[in-house]
Picture 1 (cartoon, rainbow, N blue to C red):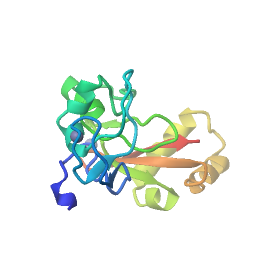
Picture 2: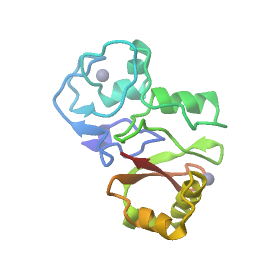
Picture 3: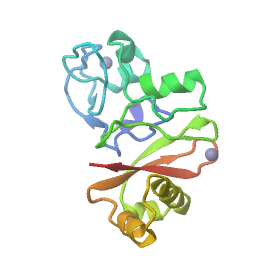
Picture 4: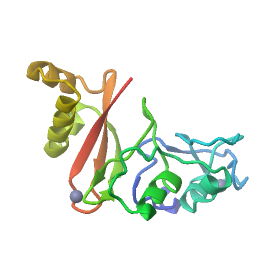
Length: 177
Ligand SMILES: [Zn+2]
Ligand SMILES: [Zn+2]
């Protein structure tokens, strides 16, 4: 059934990430019950009486009708306006402690893979190295504490993993409660 879902370049598997679930619920935009419903973030000044189907996300109708966005534009520097709009208005967001945002690599937005702990992150050493560098910039200078923090990922702090749509490299940011 998932083969019927629209394809999201910047969030290729929203079922795996839990952003879209099988549901008979009617979409707050088109009013139809299409078998799938979006469960994560949507920011709008308007009152939205329900949740959206993936198709109203993909074609931009939900974002346009309610003048809202699925993700924060924070961090989306150096990408075209088209990419910015595709990520914030036509891509499912995801569940996170903090407002979800996208990472940028190779002048394009990354594709969101999912929330991961240390073991999964360690399978992508480049993402782990980059997260380590970011945490140092954020003030985590004590190396043993920093490694301790990383190995405890999944408990109070998780990593949001992305894959570069251009070169395939993985990257991640830390999300804490
Ligand atoms: Zn809909
Ligand atoms: Zn790249």
